[in-house]
Length: 168
Image 1: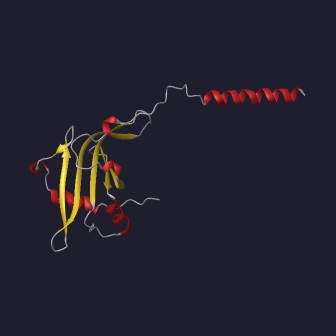
Image 2: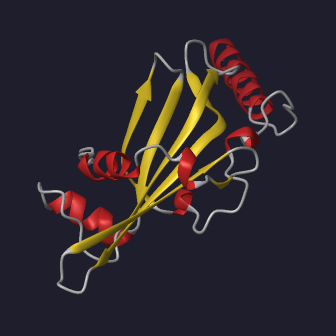
Image 3: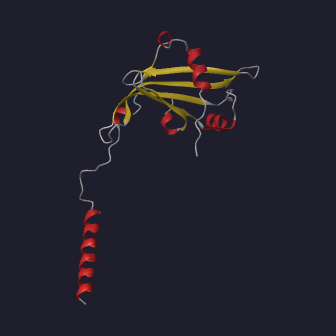
């Protein structure tokens, strides 16, 4: 009988510790939204609500980018190897600067938004694809003047040539 009493006391102790460990009184862990990575400004669309085609990290410049697209473009990118997106496709490359993650050693997280680029695919009168390009920079994000955009045709080609990441 003495062995059963010890086992019962031990089980009660473990149960009390489990209940105490699951209490909501632990104020050390709180959910924090990364406000510095938010898209703030005059954007025509919010690409963060779209699906991801691919992402990249540029260690030399300390940036990370994610290529988002609307459903038309994502469905096309996941089923075609050629990069002639259909009319109605919109792709957006969001680029952030990186900072060390204060909560996870060795990890990096997005910080300030560096730029947001949009490529919209339309159809010309003869049925060929027609592309438009817009870039947004600054804090808050504002449309970049044409002379600051550099070579928009090169940026269009770069965004359209990005291959879709393999997703499970």
